[in-house]
Image (cartoon, rainbow, N blue to C red; front, side, top):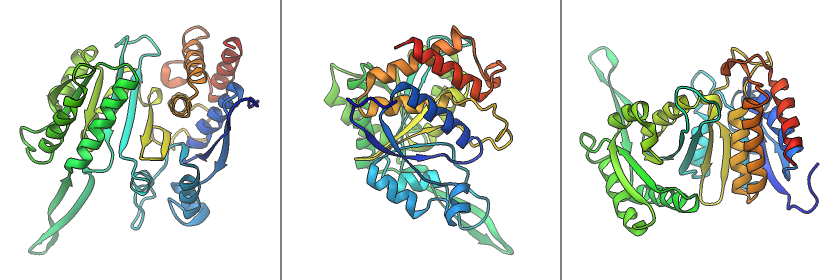
Amino acid sequence: MIRNCQQKFNATLIPGDGIGPEVVDATVKVLDALGAPFEWDIQHAGIAGVEAHGDALPPQTLASIRERKLALKGPLTTPIGEGFRSANVRLREEFQLFANVRPVKTLIAGRYDDIDIVLIRENLGGFYVAHEYYIPVGDDPKAVAVSTGMNTREGSKRIARFAFEYAVKNGRKKVTVVHKANILKALTGIFLEAAREVAKEYEGRVTMNDMIVDACAMQLVLNPWQFDMLLCTNLFGDILSDELAGLVGGLGMAPGANFGADTAIFEAVHGSAPDIAGRGIANPISLLLGAKMMLDHVGLPDLSARLHNAIFDTLNISQVRTGDLMGTATTQQFTDALIERLGSLK
């Protein structure tokens, strides 16, 4: 039940595609058991949006997020065929969600223990935006493929300041800027220059170093404990965030959040997994951890901590785990065990 003494937060809820509705349903049940004061407006996007409204990102969904400025969403599938762009990319552009935050933290002992790293990814520029075109040669209309990326100094400074402010607020001590300025001297050089400029404002509070992206990828495997936070351009952040998730058990164990000036969208970072959709075996932890970040965002750290502790205890004391974590629990069984743990942590 929602606690009467708490402010209620209106938020958009997007079940998504594939296993999305299953993990969203599990997450909402857990949040209800926790007493999280969210009032949900359910909207569609992805294939579900196309089926309901003929658009992967319907106007109704945009209007709901624009009004509430807070959303929780399951994974979205981009329909195959001409005329449909990624709904995730469109959401970032529509609400200028310039900062993507991907924390990873060990929940289950494994190959890498005691991992606690936060990746901050610039969300609107770089190669990932994919300004692409073909150059015809002879009879081949697609003989040459060209892709261009763009980073601005203003945008680079904005994401750098976001990263350093995040470090200060969350007790982080070091930001590693990831780049390829030895080769992409302009595109990632401006990103590195901007980060160094912003870092001067935080001297004595947060240290900064930088690392070439290929070296960083290797060091994440060899010695991930040297990293506290990573600050990345769009494409490098997309790649390295998945590598980070691999350190703690996979994409099912890592959440994500996207922040703009006044809007925040929290999400599961894995795909819609249509091959297991409807089978009741999906791992809901990624979205649950996204909901944990959402609780922190709205100023409910106590509920956030209870949720995190209950997830940890369900995995390690109750030993209830889904198949991707070498367990046998269904989504419902994991959800029930988690809700039982929440009750014991009151």
